[in-house]
Amino acid sequence: MFLRLLFVLLIALNIAVGAWLVLGQDDVTVPSAADPGVPVLHLLTERPDLSAATPAQGTSAPADPSAADGVAIAASSPAAGRSAPQPVGGSTAASYQCLALGPFPSLQSLRSARERLAPELARSQSRQEQSQQSRGWWVYLPAQTSRAQALAVAQRLADAHFSDYFVVSSGDQPNTISLGLFKDPANARKRREDLVAAGFPAQMTERVETVPEYWLDVVVPDANSATWRQRVHELAVGSHSTGCF
Image 1 (tube, rainbow, N blue to C red):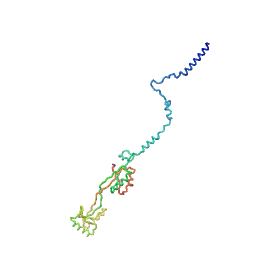
Image 2: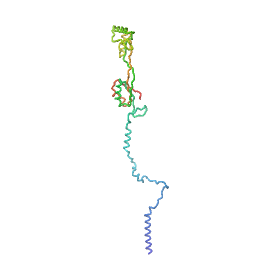
Image 3: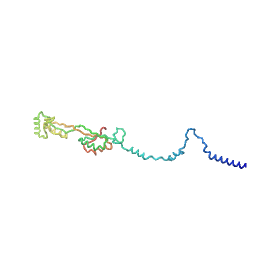
Image 4: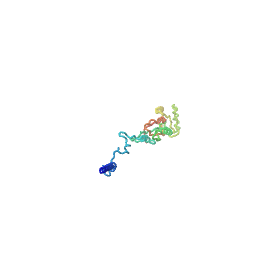
């Protein structure tokens, strides 16, 4: 009887120890390696939210092609309108020349040229100047004291076989005898010498008049500085450098 009771107790004790080994592990508290209040450190590979998103070592994440395209478009997009020429020594995408075109024979021809050149110009301005132009060399006999005396001298010229003369009857030099207006000063000089040799006190002077000149000042990129001639059809119009404006 005693042996049977001892056997039952041993079996119950084994069952209790087994139950404790199996069910009692959750209650075991593992002491923390850190001080109280300090977060526990984890390796990156231990974090499920990062390990899947982190690319493998040695590979780089692809760049966003849409972002790259956006930069290229912004860099190559031209500024609205025409950019003004920068001062000398300034930084600019293109360099410019400042030219004076002219003189144009009339204001209308200048306006026509300006319209044809407009697509190539950064800026332009028109201006009018007064200039002295030679009308030729005038050979004449000084004014006489009266018209009757001037007519008498004219008769002497005819008797000496000189032609192409007339007596000035009005203006600021009345009773002067004109003996010709010559473009070539050499021809005027020959005419005067022949008259002097025949005894007439002929004189020679250059006749000038004030006329308007029309100019077009332009600011043009270097690439187009030599193409203005293709658009301006006035052969007498030239160009030279001028101050920028």
